[in-house]
Length: 143
Ligand code: 5GP
Ligand code: ZN
View 1 (spheres, helix red, strand yellow):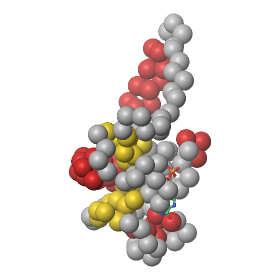
View 2 (view 1 turned 120 degrees about the horizontal axis):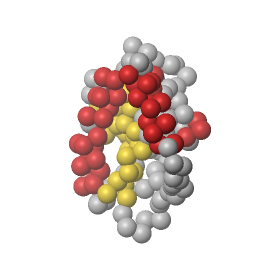
View 3 (view 1 turned 60 degrees about the vertical axis):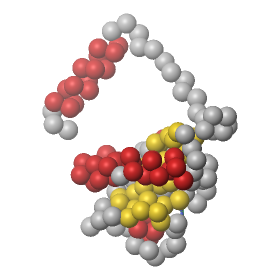
């Protein structure tokens, strides 16, 4: 079982430091984010330590994802939120601060002032096909 004694989320999973745990099973632990973007903001983590989603076995990510519907339903009821964002920061350049894979479930409601801006771009002529070809080559190579 991969674990990192210096990792705050490993320590929460092991019960070594306190957290407001709302759900636990063999593979996952869900708890309140200590600095919520909105009341009821949840984090769900694998019990095992993997820094990045790309380093975790698919079954670990599958177990994590499989509890999201239940946690999301609980969040919408408990936090009286009609909506939520499911967010996964992967890598420090993407805003990941705690290097143990986690999904955020962030309660959302109209006018809550939370948000993000996607500066969406567009592909020049032919570039989407080239990009698609690169993806297909990588994925077909079994990586
Ligand atoms: P990241 O930016 O890595 O995606 O988000 C990490 C999240 O973990 C942050 O929202 C932060 O508030 C939360 N967090 C960091 N340390 C602790 C802690 O010790 N306990 C809990 N419950 N949440 C934490
Ligand atoms: Zn960890």
